[in-house]
Image (cartoon, rainbow, N blue to C red; front, side):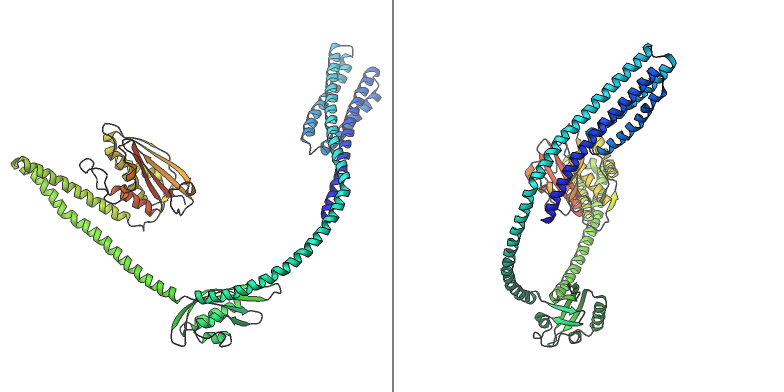
Length: 569
């Protein structure tokens, strides 16, 4: 409160200084005008009398006006209006003094009774009038400031006694509040003590439930304290033996004693205990796995204590071992499935090649000997064999996309897109498809898989284009925030690259938007449109491999769009 009163007094002093400052500015402005008048008078006296004595006030007024101008610039440094006015005043004064010099030189050379001399006199008079007007404006501005500052000063003078008495009253109130607060804090302290007792008991129960015990190493006294449950973890009754490191080591597994002793020695030396793992053997022969951790705490008296926690992690260790066994089994099964898928696909291709070879020979050599029905059957066999080859190729492609061990690379996505279009160049040319595409920034992706994604999505648009209408395919890119897209369920990244593939094809009913990503799922008759129902499943798998999302939107006879979200890392 004393600081507040001092601040108010300083504010009062400052208001006096501001009033004085305004007077100083006005004085300097009037001084400049006076010096300029002296210079004008000295010039006229010299012109009339030709006596150089009259030039002394002319030259001295120049120096004096410069000093006053510098003083004014310093006094009004925080006033933007006056600073601007000073710049204009400087220009006018310079012009005025320049005209004085020209007039003297002209009078000496051509005399005073000439038109040229009178023109210079009129120009000097006009400049001097402008100086007077500008100085009057500046003085008016200062007078306005003076009125404001006088009001503030008077207000400060009026408020000072009130502030002083208010400070005293508030100080008394604060003393009363302090007394009340201390009394209230005593009641709270009693309540906290009760809560502490409850918390202590709750901590003991928590140790039992979570199978951990606490210990404290008093560094300055070189002694330990063990919680009750730490004894229970060792299979002993609480506080059944002195809490020393030597007694504790008697329970440690023989193979772990040396390492634990080394960790304890290091803990005492470095006053720190990172996570350590060891085993203990209870008296009944049970082996338990322990994990321990300690952190140093220094109190206000510079007393050091290492607070530690020891946890029984036997169940975690056994679960981890079981999980490892299950993972090994799963990994082996995956390898067997992958091997089976690969071998089966390749083994299927051999008889299929023979079937297609014999079909080709029948077409070349025996087609004339076949009946009309035989030719029909032959064509159906040929179509079925081609479809089976396409199915095997797609299965192999899907098998490759299941492998997520490929490393992400910083990739030029525009180049990947061009490669995909080159793969489909024949179909694009045949259907006279038109493309529009945004520039796509580089991303961290698996290049081969992303190229396959682009091929499948563009190929899908080409396949399901309208009869007799050139396909128009647009590819747009934007960066979006995960929070702004409700479709992104549990996103792992804050921002995503959004790639949208839009076409003007036959589209589809929106109710099938999720079904089309299911393996072997088809919305159209295989006789109408070729395909195996695997292409979009491959797209879904590729996007999943990149921790992204893919969504489909469609409307019958109006086209379809696919939105791909890839993480921005």
